[in-house]
Amino acid sequence: MTELHGRAEELLGRELERFEREHPRSGELARPASGSLLAGVPMHWMLRWPGAYPVYAAEAAGARFRDVDGIEYVDFCLGDTGAMTGHSPEPVVHAVAEQAARGITLMLPSEEALWVGEELTRRFGLPRWQFALTATDANRFALRLARRITGRPKVLVFNWCYHGTVDETFATLRDGRVVEREGNLGPPVALDATTRVVEWNDADALRRELAHGDVACVLAEPALTNIGIVHPQPGFHDSLRAATRETGTLLIIDETHTLCAGPGGYTSAHGLEPDLLTVGKAIGSGIPSAAYGFSAEVANRVEAAIDRDESDVGGVGGTLAANVLSLAAVRATLEHVLTEEAFTQMIALGERFEQGVKGVIDERDLPWHVTRLGCRVEYLFRRERTVTGSDAAAGGDLLLDRLIHLYALNRGILLTPFHNMALMSPATSEGDVDRHTEVFGEIAGELTGG
Ligand SMILES: Cc1ncc(COP(=O)(O)O)c(C=O)c1O
Figure 1 (cartoon, rainbow, N blue to C red):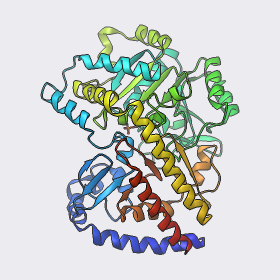
Figure 2: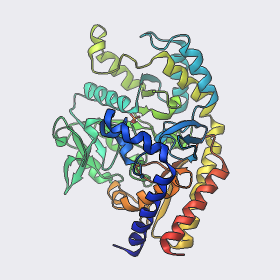
Figure 3: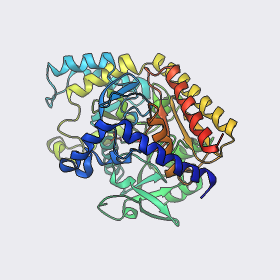
Figure 4: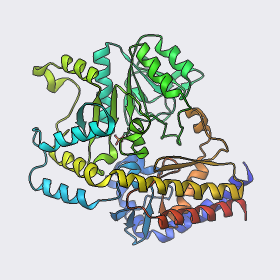
């Protein structure tokens, strides 16, 4: 154990005590919760929060929320991107309330669907769209359709990717073999039956795996965001597009997180040309909604494959998908909240956050680094930037993660529980960012004994 880790252990004990002292009401609610809720939480990922129990939320607005103990927080987690819009933005609250009073779900289209389809085309460039309720579902449906129209069984993903709870994507490389990721609960089949895996930025491995001719599609975030941020190296996207085209493999770009790069995500900011594109989480300000888009060629192939009389049992879609409430929320979000101007402001705040963290790391000479994609910033506990998911995974540090999250939480700052991610919303202020820099400086000082 390094000196830094020894100090971290001590600080963690102190911070855990402080957490319990200052969050008695959350504690009172957490105790009986194990009677009625599996694992004592309404969704088991909430076990990842760093205290003895999660704080219970009372209310949220903009970039802040208050817990049941009356403590106010600056929220950089923002529902792990679901609330990248800021919590409950006024135009969306208004549109949702209006729509809820006029119908919620009908299995019929509304005019909003047309507006949203056209706006998604304007932003991302793909001409045709379908809707789902979660990004997980958008990815699942995109994979199914890719398999259907190519007639190929497999999917290729990058090592340490995350695309939602999609069976095929919970694969990783161990000694060069495709195996299931640790923690994967109840996979239906061995992962090497469905999935090929290569390291991000490894164009040679990509070509080698696609050469088998059995891969329907590559599903990729345009930069990995779920194991820290791992940017593509120059030329990697060109290689990816060329290799997929040469082998008749479809390219699905998942913009669920990388929407942080701008109004049309990374795809528009960097001129990517995917065959399909998926996006979810923030597009409805957190009202369950997601979309998947098709190039004209892929759309034609999919339309030719759909049997009208059997279209309700094709394994794609859902009763509540494309409901009128979701689409009203997506329209209000795209029209009034996640606008060009909002992104300009959010990205400037991301730069400020990055500079603040970098300043502390440099000043303390910590063996860490910070990366940014648009308005998403992440710090990782290794000195150099990472090139692959495996590099990034090796830079993870559960103890430091837990300590920094708890230390920040105890000082009114919420970071995403799964990694050290901070996201800027249109409601985030420079003062919020500077507060984080101050707290990050304090923990760095305590860890280095200065
Ligand atoms: C890139 C990416 N795609 C898809 C998803 C799935 O989103 P959801 O859990 O809302 O279905 C996630 C979730 O973190 C994600 O990071």
